[in-house]
Picture 1 (cartoon, rainbow, N blue to C red):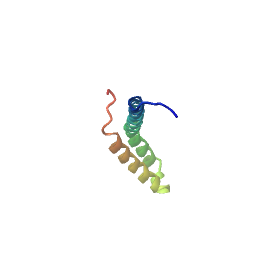
Picture 2: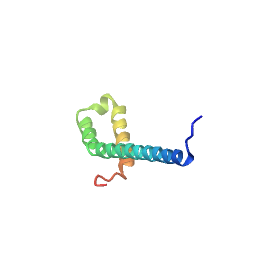
Picture 3: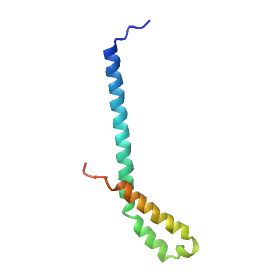
Picture 4: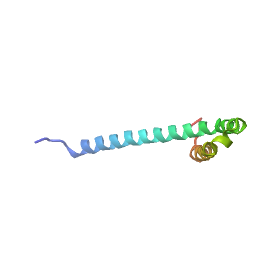
Length: 83
């Protein structure tokens, strides 16, 4: 039978929770950053698609790009590159 004292076990549990919290925060920041930076060139891609006639050939592609741009803008709006 092991003799692990509860305070050290609680300390380990707190350390694991802190690392998990940091990992989740890093992942959320990365997703927000990716969405923020994706929002910037997407209008150029949409205009390029419109100018090359993709709207006539595949209108759902253009609609999908517009929806993607709106979603990326919503997700990336709280991203702060300097933070």
